Length: 142
Image (cartoon, rainbow, N blue to C red; front, side, top):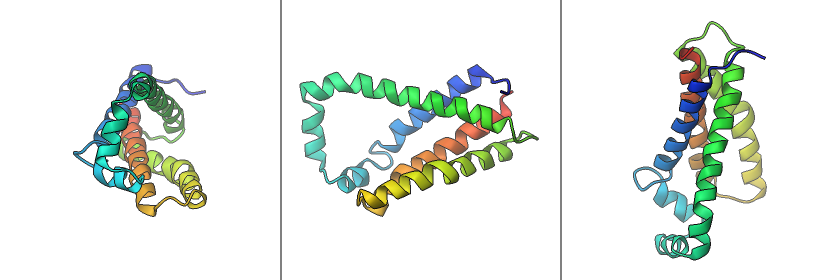
């Protein structure tokens, strides 16, 4: 297994986590995502105020951070197999990993769960941008 820069993995994982917060915020896609999930803003606010949601949120955020760290760690291993390393090569590897693994599996799942294609685009778009950014960071930070 190739040598991994764990500081770069940590930073990439945190960047993925922060991007998720921004991606699903009102700044970007919160409104269409909420609508496509079959909810409205009031329902979301009501749910977020429940004791169950307040207990679950720290765990959900923690698991989202762990997920970002795992993505970054695996991406660090994969990127090292595609020299010469550069920002462009990292972006290419990230995009190919997204296309070959995340996009295809999530698309098939969305087909059978009858989710709107626009919901898949929002969710999968987040994965694409995450993978590309992580690939860039991990390729250039040696």
